[in-house]
Image (tube, rainbow, N blue to C red; front, side, top):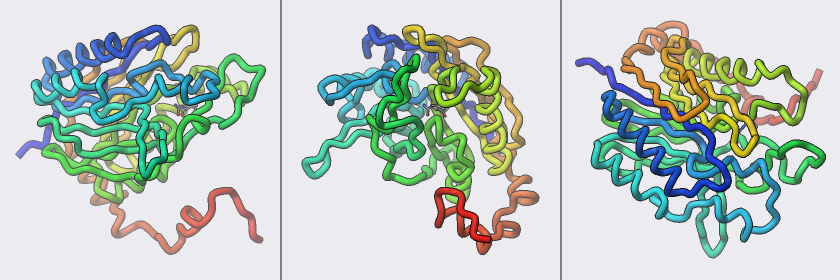
Length: 311
Ligand code: CDV
């Protein structure tokens, strides 16, 4: 039996501060329909897909920043998307800012949800590698304050079995960390879904502009190959109220090759019929984890964060 499944990545162009949730969700629904029309069973949408990338701005009180968060799953704003996806029989990954109240405590996370084609919520992922700072750097064109607005994710890297294989999720900066993908691969993931908002400019160092997209692609390609899995990567990109972010949404095969890539910096759907068995020969040979991994030598990966030189 063939294990070919059509996957879509729905890249978004900018979402401005003045855009309403209803306008933004209508764009997501339009892309969902396009993906369905091309035979897609699953769609990957971006990180924080429902609003502008608000961590670039300085807010001091929850009264100011709570407007960017969703409560409930689906939140009221998400309901039309959930309804349409269930009607079409399309599953999806969606990134959003999550606010929950737990034991009387308000908690906020940078989250993604995985919803099955029949509308079942399979599970959530909460971003673990939060980039940027808690306090503003100041004297800079824009900030990156994810550590100010979100807690570090507390769900680890779960994977979810579906009728079309086992999927794992991560979010944006997580893709630069090989540990992210190896943990999901060790839990059987055959498809990694991720959304991102990557500014074209590195505010911490004057890096040549071309490196932003190169490092993005390098991370996806190595993650796919080293774990013999498919990668679905969806950008929110273009200029949000004058702040530019890279495009380059892509589908990468387990051989590490980009098989589909967005051409624009706007709303754009890319699709590919993915053979979920393509990674099998890699998992039987060079990356046969059971035969070749040497965990007795990997201790520092979980016992140290920073570099420590002992000799
Ligand atoms: N949203 C992100 O996590 N952005 C980071 C930037 C700040 C480097 C990224 O890894 O793309």
